[in-house]
Length: 558
Image 1 (cartoon, rainbow, N blue to C red):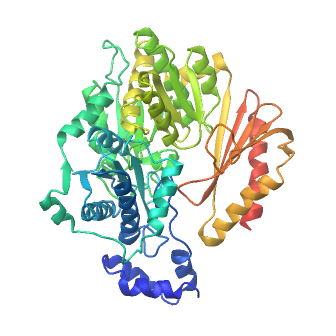
Image 2: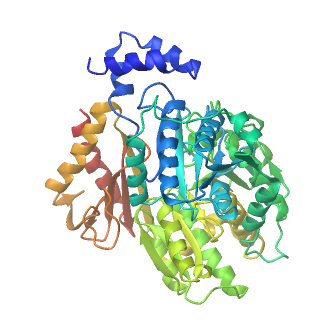
Image 3: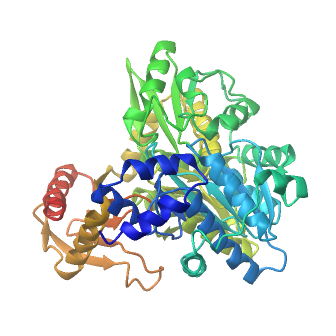
């Protein structure tokens, strides 16, 4: 009942989008539905905003977008004499509306806006911020979340997603804005007519693709004639990936018609996440029908890519960790071979990414840096190198959640770049060494040992779920387990108190045999994520760890 007053205000004032009025009317007299939309405001952090599309402060809509944008505008005006922003958006429902809403707010605040005229990958926004010399940027996207979600990522002038301190400062500015009375705005068309809003031209799009193509590491004489199925999963990848591959000699590309056209409903894969097999089923069927050698699938904003390779009569999916170590090894091998490996090379991975990368990097004399979860921290490391005039030392960065980058031209993971590298890697092993990627991975296991990884996610929906997830993390801090799966816990690392990394709500438990589990709440979804790592003969122990945490999590969800 405590949310009724706020609900009534929205019923009276949320008139800018007719869908909101329809939704608000449909939940009248349903206290649970009202509570879920009004019990809090969407949280704003280093990942910006992300939530279900709908009415109320706990939803993505033109009002929450407007409020966030006004707060960001106020923040930029305090820091810059003549601020400017770049905007990109993906294929999700209302992405264009939210992008134009944000543009209108920035423009009304005297901030110069540059906006892409078509769907573009998230990394293209990072590129545009730097190319155009902007003070910041936003991408309207919910990445790989289910179809009912949308989001709002914020980038700094360095092309990186914002830091923790910047997020806190922007959040303070957002908190001071009244969602209905505190937002200045102008119609998008008026902003275009006045020149306050400008479309990003083809020259920037071409410059981005040129920068991606410059990351090629493959010799010219390698055969590229194998068959590729590429699916953008109805997202923004269609604007860049096929063109990038064709520019680099990969011309036998098939795109499933069902997933070629941008569509925010994602009718053939409601969960457009290339990490899960269900999202790849249409692509796999197309590959099987055409006997294609390689399947590539990018998420809606084209910063992640999943792959499958033909193996016998079927297809084998490779995990983000497996593709990451394959690419790290391949890039280092090729750059040593063609003489482009920098002195004192650097690679970067996240703390929830396979420790196998440490061994691969060491073999090539590459310094490997571990950072917190989130590609912004990898981008931050590139930025630190750039400040020292040493960005050329960066050779590769990756995270287990299918994000990769091999150049310093952007500060975010880039699936266009990754698709090119994967195709080059596939071509190299197929033509030069006469082996498959699966065999190449087995060779790496033979050299460095077998590593096993697994991710389990547990959903905590609504206000009660959010509280339960917080209670679970606190219980782990108060009473950590002495054993997991029968193996003693020998080390507990709490990243809220880590001395060399920013504070983060993450706990790592290391077992006696070197296996480990990392537990953290997702920053973008109402989920608790647990990452499991085992080496050698530890597969059975890995299953025991999973069973242990399954019981632990369920005790908080009951």
